[in-house]
Image 1 (tube, one colour):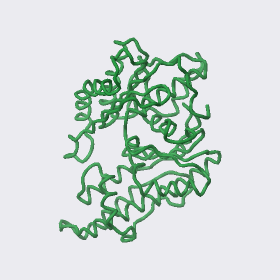
Image 2: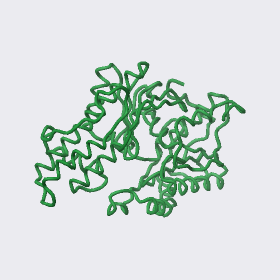
Image 3: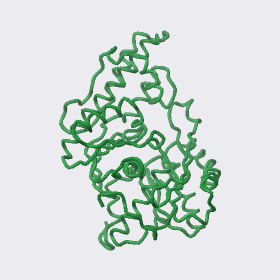
Image 4: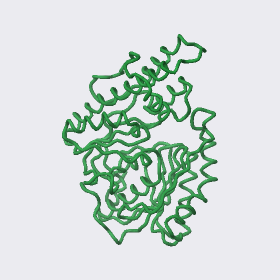
Length: 369
């Protein structure tokens, strides 16, 4: 399927979806045509003192938040539970405790209501978000190049169809979001670091500090941010425990952000060379909300005569709308292969779930590994 799926009124609709793969607890109700009927996300604050997500805290917070969150989206949509057509949840990759909580809660709803349960790959959900109606006029037709940039992921993926993905390159050390978090901590900023660094960078000169661009110009589209992070630490070393002047902090934040944008832009150019049939460039994940990075990616796409698409800011970070839409795309693709609506009630959540596994769900009976 190259375009957005055609209406299929006989498919289960709407889909109630749950996302709990990290520190955001989210729930949404989305109809089969992509209409967002209700959505809600709770961002946990208990991790702030630790400067990063603590899995045990995250799992307990998901467990406490989900019942009220599901009731909330049902109320916002003006629906009773019996009006739901299918249930979906992220089942990996992610923090296993949170995945278990969300998936089991969703499975319980599915069993109680007698509805199909659709397990969603969290990365695939990010990959397909650009096809949600209203984001791009043509529904991001396949194939397209996806840049997934977040706190835990930094990958270039050739999205060739629902269930069909090729990893072209990825980070060999830190993810981009992880580097933002670590630099924010060095600068004495809050967590998560991405928005804090971007806000400070607005007041700084991006040429104030000479920072490295690891792997820039190299063959392929792998990323490296560890050396850049170390270079920032070296620039800060002379100040030791002294208060960091605001202009120095702002200049370093701006210089770091520019270095990241330069690295990503170079890697994307190489990725597009590796995917000459790409019909578009798509960015997703929390770091895709960075305005400086979006501007660079827009320039690259325009220069190559390609459309650039990125979700609205609220759909860049982890959310349940993307989980519901991935489930809807999965149902449509199953129908296109002459298969029934999937029911993944027996599938177990897993911390790792390669995108290469997703094609198997559309294989004819008896041919999947």
